Image (cartoon, rainbow, N blue to C red):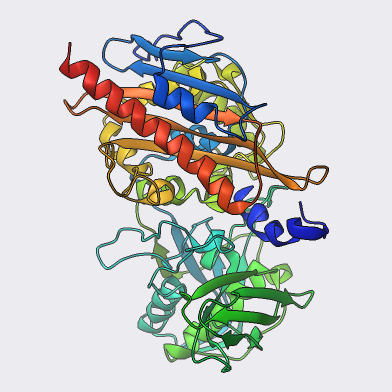
Length: 531
């Protein structure tokens, strides 16, 4: 989807690149059904709208208490899962790491101390911490917006108010409190925790601000330059903008370009005077060098002088083979992993889902992130008691073309959670229809199901060059329906092979799937009242 294409498809490319981003006690597998004619006229009308002529719908709804199958359509057939893959990844990671697991990122002093001077190096041992304090609220929870900055090409993407460098500032103050005011040497990021895998986005042991530079343009008066806010501001990164404010109702179209090393970023284009601030991002090409410089600058703010040049490559070759005898002078401790899982599930955080594979592999003593698939297989088979062959997965986020899942497999996994101590915590970590996360934008008004559908959506989009339109490889969601009487149903609803003319009409497909989930909740509630 990255190559330049002619005509109206060109304007969709950036948005599509982001979206393609999306037990013995378990419920028994329902028999496959090719057709289910009892969905009701409202749902059938949605499924037969224009754009679904050649599509395939999958449906499964199961009463979590009785195991009764309410609806089933192609429940045992492989469908493209998109980001519903994250249900498998995060269930496995939650079980493997534990909801209370915290990442401790230490800083060790190598060399000798003479008073307040360290002659040697400070080594930050990267631990695969997803946020490094950059989203942590004062109460210790992890902040998020419904449309995350990692999805910056989508309308409504927004920043959280927290400082992306907060964790490094904490570390720097601890170094100063340890009595060090001068480092006659260097600061080095040790990234040897795992080998970054060939995944998109690629997880790395050192991550600051999701390895992104945020670029927020705010309109001013027509004809004037737009106001620019960018963060985190770390040398040698520089940002220049020629974005101009145009008349109300005018085009808001901002393009981002960067030098090959990513450190020189330019913004161009226009933003309407009545438009909301428009967010764009640019990738950090070298997370280790970026983290090193950011820590040196944080140390300077804390009153610690480092003699090495603050910019330049991370001198990984100078790291010792062992840290035996090296004192720890600082450490950043993350929020509990349940908070990271909530972030990943609420906003469909692709980097975090891929990173979860590495986190699991490291916990089991491996530097190969793909070893996590053995952990996932064992979790599904031996813990959740879900047949692993109900899934075919090659990443953590659900962005590989070969990824597949059955509705039965997904709902059985959801059923596993209901028999764990973390059942409610997990359910509330999913996007809530009309309330928050990826599904917060649907069912916001005149919707009886608002706040009663807890589900992980998934999206796969592509460009149909032949017909100059968007091909919706998958739009689905899997989760829980909470009836008005307080009962839970497990459900999957999804469509493979829909088409849309443009991005706005694709949003209509997203809303259609959410509308069906809302109708299923209303139907389940009505059936209980008449039982």
